[in-house]
Length: 418
Image 1 (spheres, one colour):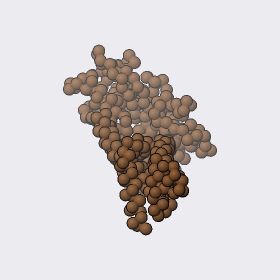
Image 2 (cartoon, one colour):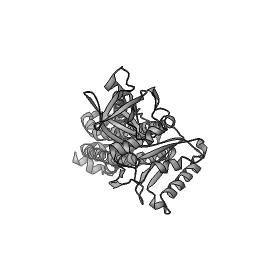
Image 3 (tube, rainbow, N blue to C red):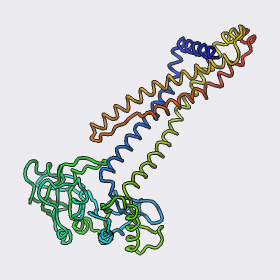
Image 4 (spheres, helix red, strand yellow):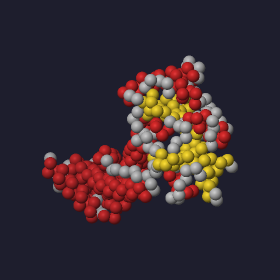
């Protein structure tokens, strides 16, 4: 039996080699499909790993409170206006966060609201992300270190003082290597004194921390944005082993502050870094599944191409099939030969697809590095197995029927057709 399989493999390989033009054409669909599978899986894994690492870089002991649309799961920490899915959410207040901060396991914290504005110094203008923060941000966010000068105080925030701390890129744009402390910049026609400069931080989670400007949150709210709500707040846990219990206490405190009795009416969300990671896992898993489903269509098209090629091969080799059967070849021998040809085609296409996928993933890694987002798009063993699994499955499914047709040809009819 093993000898018959080896013979079938040799015959299949010989026939594919003798029709190299048709072989190459029939490979294209499989190569494109497998390349797409490898790319999608490697890009998805790379982006997911990058985002998770960026999120976790903020610390495993971080908890965030953000706005949420009641009776939905829609949240947002991206829109400073408080809009989530088109719904205006303005119920988060600094006083709520001050109440939450009294929970025993909570350490440093800060409340925040963001707004993009044009900042000016003399004749220079720059669009900057204004980060309205309570003064605890430098303690709660260990990476937001002051390089020169100082952070504004709680009193500066309460008194709506017009002071700012510049991000590294903003300082370089306006002042270069000169000292920026006590200089004045303008925002919406108003003058703000520079009291500090942040250390260079770079980009994290696709956000450029160097093109920012820290400003007392209440100054930003009342003097620039004309609002009284915040966007989100970040809390450090003293004991990360008690995060789950602390999350419950924070939720209960917020419900008491907002007089909420039904959890469905929550206008806030309390999320830990671990929960964010779980959400990312679910999101990327869903995206990968949908993309693989779409890519399977291209593999199906490639499979149809292979089936057509195999049908043509059966027609062209009718005499050969009849001759082999007349000298004792069994139906199973013929079936194996044509089925192996189909499987060889798809596996060979799979090999080429994996190589192309690996090459393009490497190019994507280099490109992301040049773009300032160093993402490692790795081709994992599971991606290779899935790619080969797809290609082999296509070969078996679409090669089986032509192989059966070839095996069922009558020797006499086959010889007569020639």
